[in-house]
Length: 67
Image (cartoon, rainbow, N blue to C red; front, side):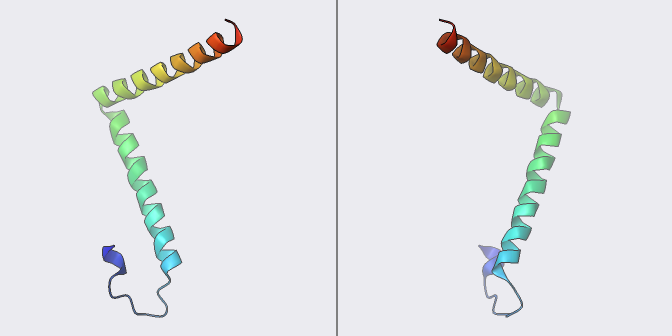
């Protein structure tokens, strides 16, 4: 990765750099979800996908337990 090149300093800990990168990526994911939810078409897609997923789960439960 670009942020790891030529890092020879003894006080630079690789583990902390990985944690910082994970926190940064989580913020990016959160921002992406908020941006998609603010868009009317994005919101419609999210609601449609979640509705289809819930309908599928209900179908599987009913099919396995009732029928």
